[in-house]
Image (cartoon, rainbow, N blue to C red):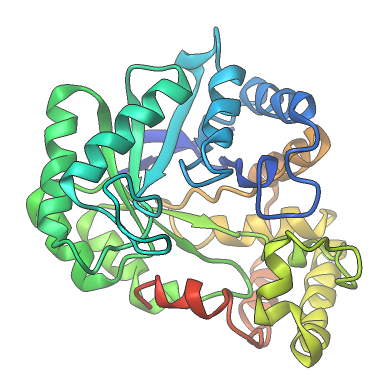
Length: 325
């Protein structure tokens, strides 16, 4: 597995998102043993960047990762996030990146993860009630104290990123980016190259849509996040199936799976990009990680570049309001 730099932090070029192991999607939390095997297999094949958050579960996803990393901590780059859960009494659903909340959140994450430091600590969403300077200032103190090693922001806009970088170097920005979600290309990627900040795309397989395996939403249970996402509903869903079909056609040309093709395309977008496709299955982490070796031709890349835009928002109304887009 090749490595890249997120700022000054070295990580595998493809990481592993853990959210589906404990929440958000159908079947989450049903087989922790398989999830731990998946994390172990990821480490064995060279995946180092493991992505979680206190809100996943909540809390149980970090606990799961902590169990999986016993005796293996030195092989992993642990990324987690704060700011959606408030520990200072703010109402449910209200973001909280206040200094007091950060200090409570980081101690909880360290305990659940079973570690004395976090490699990459993200603000999960930008808190409009707390100046970013105050948030990053507190994170800078945690770097000095050795509790975190690098600072990240998730779904932050260009102005926020510049203000944060003026306080302390930011290692990585996390945002949704894939063949069917390309808003980051003009708004973020040039800025991140300018500031030497890494980019970590989440939902890099379109929440599984780009694998070609989702042909209907009938199998989603009532807890599945996708049931509330406009891209997965009605006419939007039917339109977007055409995108998945075109990815599958290019994959056949490339001798790869659709998932590998979608990830290989992402890796062509810059040398500071480390997607974190999520899975809870060993076979899928092996498949996704093998995208590191897939070489797309210029013609295949051009076909993927020219795919039609997906129809529908990538989150429900509440989720969209939390993002600086």
